[in-house]
Length: 289
Length: 325
Image (cartoon, rainbow over all chains, first blue to last red):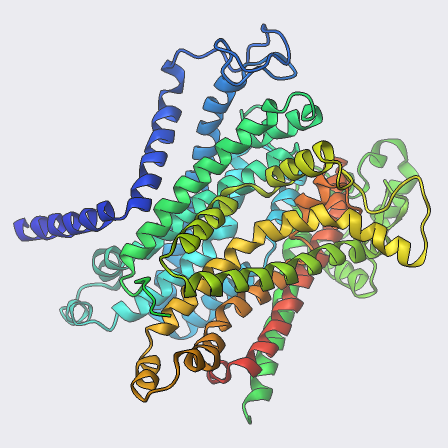
């Protein structure tokens, strides 16, 4: 037991060392932690009530309203802060669903191989061909636009890329000695899969999941931007949608939520890319040409 | 070359299966929706026009069990009948047919420009790897990648249409004048500029990144070292071998993007009021025009499947290894 812990510690330490050497990765991580911090603390921060309409409409940027007020007299700054909660929840829940389904499907396909793999791989191929944005719009229009639906549908449509990565990982792992040895010792398939294969194969999926969180945020803001999102949630996309009619005179209503999306996506992208780079040692970017 | 036919056959079967699955998904989304499906199919008319509802019920066979209904739906589809839009008072097939060309004009133009420009910049950056130009290019691309496309569009409108007045804010033609011939095309070109620019900027980072990474990867391959040792000129190695091999990944991405020529520009079309499929989709979703929504989804999904099939064929000729799979 002790050796396992020290081995995990060593692995973690060398991972952290590699990550801390990547300046761009660190920048992304700090940005992401900062956004997370703000999102979690939003209820305790000294902000105006994001729903309150008691202020004057279209107030420009000032000390009292750092990002001005919108067409209903709501404080844009506090809405941008509160909006981070919606976006992060959507991003992580959707990416979580996608990772879960992807890991399970990919592991089964890679581990059992043969006919099971053939069938699952065809299903993965088919899901990769579905235009996600159109289908999400379609489902929301038919079933209603609760944020829960939006998250779930995004998650259920984006899992194939995780499944593909996982399948490839499992395919190579299952031939390794320690897996073969465990199987020969009579340990059950499921136990080998969950104890030995998945923990060793999961790293590239984690990197991909973070990139998918960014993707999910972009899809949700896109839907909200069309005015088809959950009207009860404070969403950056919806803020841009509501503000764009006034953009020529009161640009701040739409501009800052967009900036917030870009910064959030950027942070996730930088972290995801750095993880992918570290967890895949084949990628060293130097060139003589 | 002997295994081309089985490969094509397998891919063809797969494409047909995909389309079939999409039709099933389409059918069940509508039929599992809460409430009477007739309300979904007829929309607002269900309340005002009992005759129409009765006719629809018969045509869609809603008094019959689900399995039989699915067969009827398939037969109707096969005849090219995707239903009738009560909002436009036209068959869905006709409405979609009118909107496809403007969408393709936008997406194909931007796809080609983004591919060429992205690959060019990627090659440039890879050859100047590590210099200030490379770093600032990479940085710009990451920023572009992080921007939501609709926000980018709004900002471009704000700068180039509202402030500088260089381009029109929205639409495909000038509304007040009726041009013909060359003038008409110039007018469309002028209206296309901003939406195409938005789409290009949104897609550029993908091609840039993959080209650059792919070239850097190729330069580390053993064959490059061997050729260098043999005394080949660096420029020759680069042009003749590295570039050729490195172009496969961006071509693959191009093929994947080709699948989204019908659906990919939806948001941009909506921002710029472009009379394409995107705008139609938004309206259909807003007014709960289900037959139109179903039709749009079906057409785009089949478009993706078909484009994937075509890409595979092209790829097969580019990379002989594919056939061995």
